[in-house]
Length: 116
Length: 115
Image (tube, rainbow over all chains, first blue to last red; front, side, top):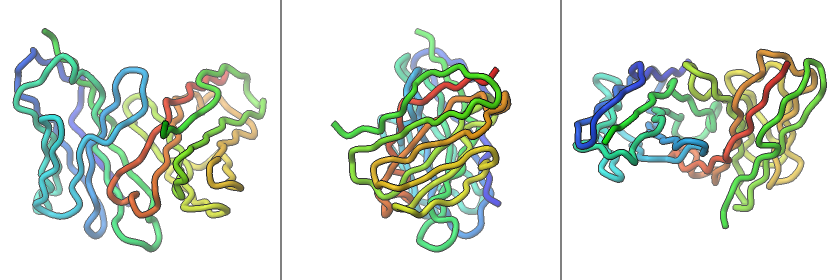
């Protein structure tokens, strides 16, 4: 079955530091890949996405590239802010129709804390 | 305002006492889904529905039931809750054609404790 593995957290950084959160996946076919963010006390929000190999998703200074050869989708940001403190989830879904369309698989989440 | 509304937001109950967590969306979305969030395990999908009267099991359906009699509602039913169902539950919805692009709207979560 499909699976998503994220780097263990929590991650603690100082403001303006460089961020990388690793994500690798196992899936049949060519899934769509996502990063979601969960701020304290809230539901998840889609941060960025990539639907095919070599696509780069980007939003709010974050970016991630769909690497089919290494089955990875690492999240990066060049300069984090205190307001980026949240839980980040890597996820995948099957593209197209057919069985299992609608099944989303999430990683375990990485807690990010950014200090001033 | 477009939203997914879950109720109750917090609940403490006892083993075996049937309960229902409601989920309602006002965006005319075909797709709705339930997840549970547990430390170290991330979000795991319980059930999902692609449209009215169409439901499918996710990865952890045991101990849960769902129904989709109306497009806007997707209640999660725990017939006989047990302590291992203590968790944070999220409902999500999307247009069916947007599911594979990850454009889900999530509710604010329902924290359930089973004693």
